[in-house]
Length: 112
Length: 115
Image 1 (cartoon, one colour):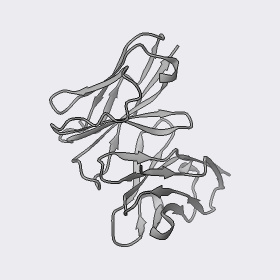
Image 2 (cartoon, chains in turn purple, green):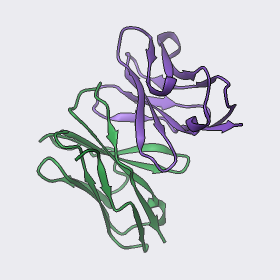
Image 3 (cartoon, one colour):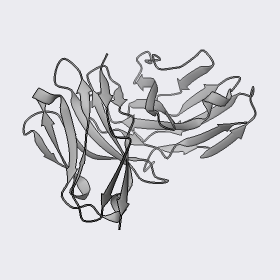
């Protein structure tokens, strides 16, 4: 069955530093890939998505993600983290069975 | 509505009682999902409705859980004889269609606490 792995439960990054959140998926073909963010007390918001074409996709709030087929990965990146980026980040895949499968999430802490 | 609306936002119930959680999707969205978010467990898929098709109930954890969607719009998730392990945030999402590339819009969730 398809699955999504986010190996980092917590990550702490200094404000202004770069960020990379890891996501690996398990599926035979190329899935549809998403990153969502859940800020404290907020619902989930879509950051970006990948379906096909250019493997580097740009999202909102200065985030980007790169799809690497050879590594079955879709890592999320941001060059310079702001304190407001502190949140929980979820990677998700949709493999055509009409349901989004989410990873367990990575909680980002931003230190001053 | 402007977004996905869930009610109540918080629910405290005694073990053994039944609860109903409501989801009002975005108007015109044909697909609706229920997820459960437990601490450290990520988002667990529960059930999926798409139009008039039979729902995908493959994620419901036990027969105490059921959901319906009336008129292709509002959905109710019912948990019978609640247990403490049912305590979680229950999230509803809707999408414009059933395609793989459509963005899911989430509600704020219902935090269920079983005491």
